[in-house]
Length: 185
Ligand SMILES: [Zn+2]
Image 1 (spheres, protein in one colour):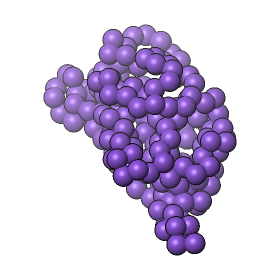
Image 2 (cartoon, rainbow, N blue to C red):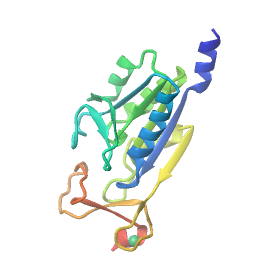
Image 3 (cartoon, rainbow, N blue to C red):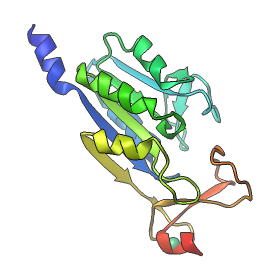
């Protein structure tokens, strides 16, 4: 009874957002590792589209990694959330708006949900469903990269190759972080 009550209090949605190369995944992994050390039951998942390094682990650009589940749609998260205390979601911008309901349901049931996501696409437009998630989040952290052109803090993911698909998985030779001024140019 006491445990259920304290669990209920812990339910929340945290969003870590920003451009590419801003350290979103590192921050997600840092928070999850801290919970693991405290012996909380931690699960991490990511969309199946996101397989640029490794399909069984979430891997950041600097190769820190944590074991994870790969899923094709947001509602699948509910199938393995039983007993989970902390649930991490990486690259959340690749899910549809169903993710908002899933995260709310988890948080309402006492799960601490931590989401890492790109908040803007390569054209600088809000990347759904992240705007909706930011609205329902308990806590939002916007992390920034460093502009490769001028050294200022950067919010934008500038695509340096000519392709028009919204989803083009990022590598250092396809994107660079840019500040507002350098992004406009
Ligand atoms: Zn700049």
